Structures are given as C-alpha cells and as structure tokens.
Length: 100
Image 1 (cartoon, rainbow, N blue to C red):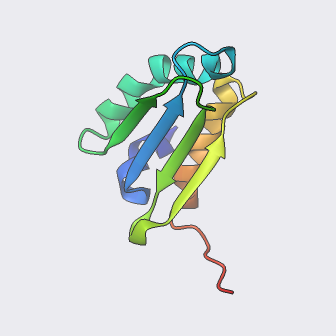
Image 2 (cartoon, rainbow, N blue to C red):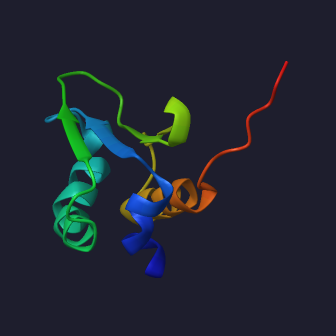
C-alpha cells in the first residue's frame, strides 16, 4: 500500500468526521483506531484531523491544492471500504474541475 505514504504529496489536509457513540459511525471509529498511527508515521507533518461531534454523519474530506475539497460519506461502509475510499481520494490527486 504505497499510496499511504503519499498523503502529503497529493493532499493538503485530511479530515475524518464521526459521532463518538452512533452505530453508523462504528466503522469510521474503528478505521481511525486501526489506521491513524500508521498513516501519521508515514506522513509525520501531514495534517490528519479527527473531528468527533455528536449526531454527525461519518465522512472523510480531502483538501487539495487551491482549496479544492472532495468528501465521501462513510455511513454503511466497512473498514476495508473506508480504506479504499481514502485510497481513491489520495490517488485522485488534484481532482478534475468542471468549469461551467
């Protein structure tokens, strides 16, 4: 999983939001418990923000260059699916911006 060490290359910030107690956030909490240390060790200066708020829907947000952000709802996703969603965000790098 070489992409794990490239968080700081492709993203500017990563935010993970979840509720401390709700069942819908259980896999997001588990994901943070199992993966935060490894991600932070591989990207020591990269900001990985964990936001706990009662009643919030679990989400993961990636911020790219020029303030572009992309978010994914995590409700109903298992821990491996959350890991795959994060991998997709990292590999997306700077997302395609559609001009209107």
